[in-house]
Amino acid sequence: MVSHTLNPEGICRRCKGMTITDAVTGERFCRSCGFVIEEQIQESGPERNITKDDRDDKTRVGMPTSLAIHDMGLATTIGAADRDATGKPLSSHAKHEMKRLRTWDSRSQMSEQSDRNLRHAFTQLDKLKDKLTLSGAVVEKAAYFYRKALLKSLVRGRSIEGVLAAAVYAACRDVEMPRTLDDVAKAINIKRKDLTKNYRMLVNELELKMPVVNSITCISKIANKLGVNEKVKRYALEILKNANDQRITAGKDPMGMAASALYISCVKYDVDVSQKDIAMAAGVTEVTIRNRYKDMRKLLDL
Image 1 (cartoon, rainbow, N blue to C red):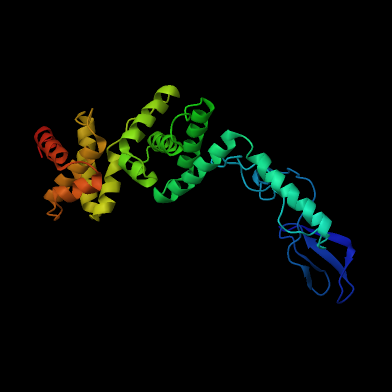
Image 2 (tube, helix red, strand yellow; image 1 turned 180 degrees about the horizontal axis):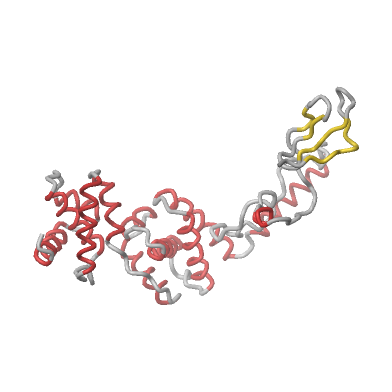
């Protein structure tokens, strides 16, 4: 039920009646004629936590903090509008002073080398988020890995893009998102060799425990690129589950195993997809698909 509070100071300018403020919607209207005086009133009072829902509601406290922002969203900025609190334009002397303050405020936020490093790195991370369609959890994890690398001076002597790409790949591995080394290297335009070198450095120096990539999670990525139907995808998943139960996938490339299972499924349902097409979609060679295909046909009696 909506709670109304009486505003004794507010008087309707139409019928001179008393006004009521809706505490939920923020509307102020006349109690007599219903005339809406203000559609939304900004509450300027302190935060009052009444219930758990009210305590979790942070809509009036600004944007949330994020590790993917160089200052984590905690810095303040001086507005560009040359007006005071009442909306009146500032004098020429005050405008000059505000311009100087904005300049020094901007310089003070980027005074340290680490701040400039983080700003450049997280600008590239924002581009990678769109290119690789990364989730917010992956972006936050990648920013966390990069901050730890910067804190340990692991970025010194290495390119920012190279270490950032390694952090992104490590984050994808950590949350089990199917992104290959080639995908990350191509998105940020570095060599795969440099990416693998930096990734091994991060894992060793930060003592990361990376989970093994599950080949089942790679099926959807390859199937979506090829455009095969759901029936083919489900049979390929069944093959991989049987292979995992018999530990055939141990020590094998997950993307190669997924590509081979999908090829077996395409052969079973007479889908016209060549080994070359599957190899290009999976980022593996045709020889890998043929070898895994032979092993699974023999061991699983397909």
